Length: 124
Image (cartoon, rainbow, N blue to C red):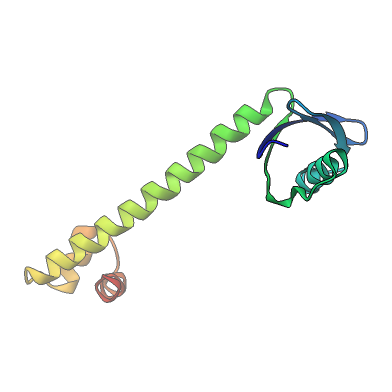
């Protein structure tokens, strides 16, 4: 038995057909239960404990899976950019305050409230 199984999940009337590369096909009502179903299928087929194998289920939905992957990637990139920007704002606020710039002037420079400047210097 392999240690890695790639599974193509294809929609059908009652859920998903699970095409296990090099093994066979089984079915699942939902993607949430697809990995467990593949493991059960492998365990039955090979008479082994399939909990230790890697199973990757790749849904296919008329090409929408690629658009979904792109949307997820863009969201993750935006979240990372947001964290980076927040760190930069905290650093600059701290540098302005360390340089003797008042809270009021720092707030105006950064385009935030005075209360936000205080929050940012506490978390920096």
